[in-house]
Length: 156
Image (cartoon, rainbow, N blue to C red; front, side):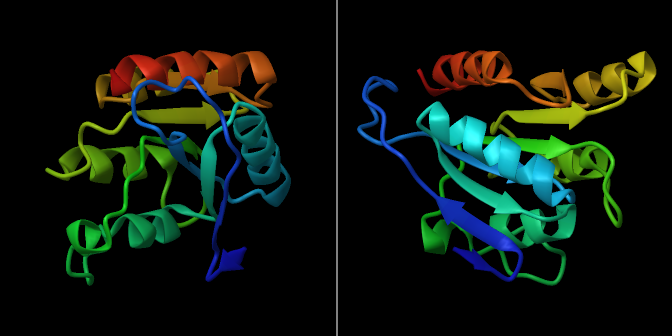
């Protein structure tokens, strides 16, 4: 389902901790093919996936837009991890990371930045700002297994 640039899908997995539910990952990428690839890899690793086509849509979904009242608590929205492309029009993944880390509600949610460019200064900047990991695109299933390991560490 894709409503207003945000879509959500799910698959099941036993053994993701004591939560009784699969981890929920928000995947943000302006490139449809990359977004679908990340979604498929995450679903193969038994994650619930919501996708957003850009940083503003992600903020909207998370209830962090400047013009929104914070509806996060009311809707019961629970995101266990956010994975975002670095280079997107309108708002970069780095800017999205900063907004998330400024939020009292979401600052503990791990954020993973992806990029097709291996630029050490960019990687360091993201990690210093609080990114959990920086991964090079295209993502592979082995990368997602690392992500799942991070998720499990963060959830326990």
